[in-house]
Length: 295
Image 1 (cartoon, rainbow, N blue to C red):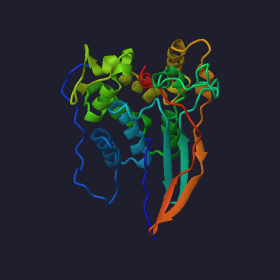
Image 2 (spheres, rainbow, N blue to C red):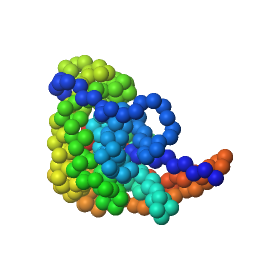
Image 3 (tube, rainbow, N blue to C red):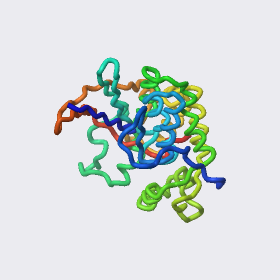
Image 4 (cartoon, rainbow, N blue to C red):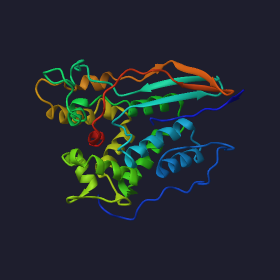
């Protein structure tokens, strides 16, 4: 019986546009030493580079997720949640790490209902009352501490470089900003990144994110504590709570300090002679407010 494993990490000033490091581009489903896969060439080239430097799969995953937080923050980032399915080849065993974002301790079952019991509008759902305690960065630190090989700072550096030196915005990010512009334009941080005056920056624009670079530099020095026990946690709690009404569920610094990555059961099945291993059911979680992934 063949055995195949797929690992998924749920995982603006102008200058010379940063380019991904060179890596093989021909479609190929085999590799003599290692393979990496991502939806973005900056992310793929980062994983390839980390493995070429002697890092292992967890090192590559950490660096790739952090770069994705910079170059494609509309889909993933340190302000959200992540699952990681880890395979130990020596022990022949799987570990499922749950770094999903969690609702604050003040959350209630009816927090997304109006006084008449009906659901609130989509814009309200995607607003500050849906902010959850993020899990991605905690999971990255947790798995790196247990399984990583390279130095933590080395893994954060590629994301810092793209945030400081620039990357080319892809069409997918542009399409999302255009589609959600009536909502996003009211967020000052998002508008500063994606608008030039009253016009959305086009696909291919060289993007930099100095605030994200500063955040990543602090994370390189302090690790995940910067988000869960440091200045970034305080900034998020104060910013989000200021946008909430008096009777709405608030965030707290205790929520951040108490966040823990969990280990879940794996699910096994077979299909056409292949063993399929996947993540078990996680707990339900709220959404994350995207603009607060930087400080």
